[in-house]
Length: 348
Image (cartoon, rainbow, N blue to C red; front, top):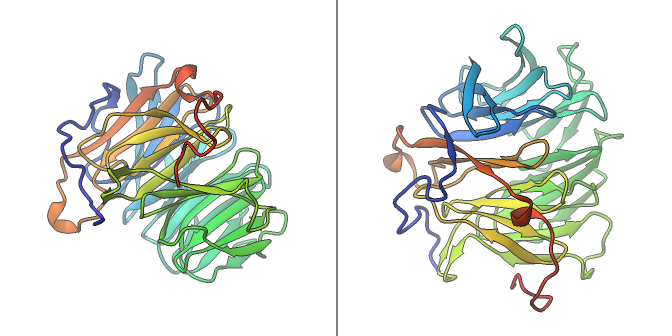
């Protein structure tokens, strides 16, 4: 079937009646991250801004601060103590933003846009991944990286969980790194998916990852497995009648249950359980793509952007249509439950 780019038939950006963060961005939302202990939320945008809100228990988001880069903000990550936010930009720099003083200072640089940043609290360093084909590691004090990993191609999707780093590159490889040895690949494998990688998420237990492609498919893969291993599998998602096929834009794990969410260019988000191989909850389709989504620290809220993802080029861009929504997550929607159907309920 033809690949399709704009959700058909949906009329509202908020058909699930989730709480909305007002004035979240004036251009596409590229990244969001929740603070590690409290309900503070940051969102970075193609408008060069990163904004911070305090989210109250009733879903009201109170604006707290904002800072900017010289080009679109593509990545954001809270420090382990929740006092600072690291930001990565198309201006080729990363900054550390101190929320108490509202000061942002450059803390990293690359030779091309920085696509991902992660604060690794286990190793006490900042991880930056750039389209210059490198991942660099910074202690926050020195102007030069403490270590560098050279990738085979540009990183299209990266995740860090504990000491596990996974990077899906433009040549459909997946580079697996043990952050105790950050400048070497522990292993490099061919992606299990035939199409371009769009997103990747490491399991909370660090035993594997889920990777999503532009062709409405996710692969569940264990790091220490053989190619024939039956615990590795794929499933289709973000498709309509298998004819309209959309990109899987983001995968986010729930912090306590090990279940996960996917968001797609079809304007939907879904909750999944990889262990019982089933979809736990499907949500009503929004009228714009969902580029990114993330659970808060205790998994009781899911923040997601409903925002143009540039998949149809500049002529379909509407600057007034960028939304940030907050979905309260009851346990019944996200907790693993026994699969009532046959083992292959996900389909292939």
